Length: 70
Image (cartoon, rainbow, N blue to C red):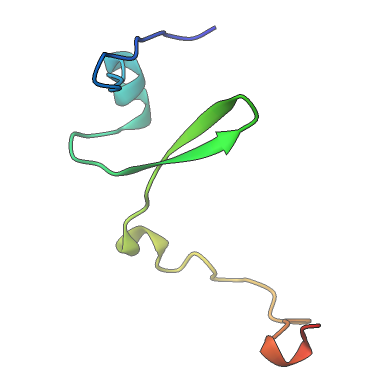
């Protein structure tokens, strides 16, 4: 099991320093909570600049467009 933390009376959670440093997270960064069974997955929201080029090299064959949907 990893590092633990406590939910405050204001429903806030502090992310332990060791986790922040390992992940490279900084103050002011935005996150999304993704439900996973009885827990949640915490992911940083990527900035637009980080998404540029993400589809480079993608296979364009058999691409479905809006005209072939059922």
